[in-house]
Length: 163
Image (cartoon, rainbow, N blue to C red):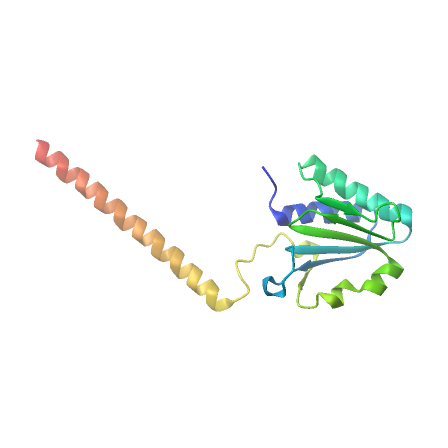
């Protein structure tokens, strides 16, 4: 059983913070942007050893939860380490590489999430769609109640006929 994506990202962020990763940014990718994943987690390390330690700790924490990266790139150079967990991608940069690639600017359509807000569940960003979802839930629960009443009334009618 796999963890929901937001919980996986939260575990990764906890590991990053545990290894003193700097400037952690979580980008929730816009579905219309053509992104190949749901989230980017971007952080910086001050030296190659710290960058590798962050990547190691993320892999360890998620590995204990049964999650393994689909691919790992850049680990030996430790200038930019990428861990691809399919539903989210972790980028651990040196300060110089992060400024050069500037992923936050490149994916500016993505919504930035603070680590504290990560576990807050949002159904959708569109308020009109939220109302439709709520109405649909109310209608479906009302229909279920009516069906339940019909079946119970049929059962009592059947019991009366048998007597």
